[in-house]
Amino acid sequence: MGERTLALVGATGDVGTGILRATVRRGWSVVAVSRTPSRLAALRAEHGSAVRTLVSDIGDEAGGVRLAAQLGPVDAVVVSVHVGCPLRPVLDWPADELNALVAGNVGAHLVAARHLMPLVRDGGDFLGIGGGMADLVIPRYVPLAVAQAAQRQLYRGLIREARKEPRVRIRELLVAAMVNGPSTRQQARPDWITEDEIGERVAELLAEPGADTGAELDPGRSIQTLVSPRATR
Image (cartoon, rainbow, N blue to C red; front, side):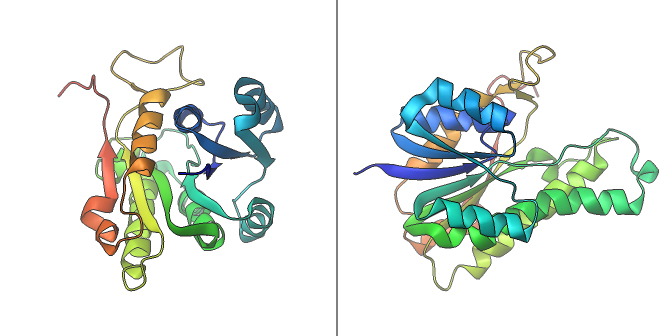
């Protein structure tokens, strides 16, 4: 197999850095996309020629158009972006702030699907990273759960609509754990999942055969959940 190109959107986030390391180790040529130039410079210093960097924001349609024009054809796209939120009871959230939170999370993935998925070569992958609160409600985290559930439904819809003409394998990986990443290292607990553990799972998914078959578009197999190997029940 020749060199494979991955467009990684959100490459400098807690999850994105782990995905970047894991895919570079497996021989991918990665285009790392982020809104933060200084963090991209650190990635170039760490990974050298295996990584090309692009400063871009897929928060709106214009950003998606610009990024697509810069990218060109790729073998896979991974979207690891989310909008954070303060923790407070759901009834303390103004409706416009809740709408903005949902739009910021779901909208970015929709923009990526609309503008970047057409760049994926036949048989390639389009993978979104979501959160485990799509199936779980915790007090003070309710708005985040709403956003993650909406994102999961977006991917289910993309998968179902692609069934008739499966060209790209569409999936979502729900990370059902607190993440021990660069920004959370100081307060992370031992049972939190690390960015490298997430990265390894993403690399495994991208390596699975059968991306050009309709069987992989079954929502039952295409929406997967990842938990920490040290999680206690």
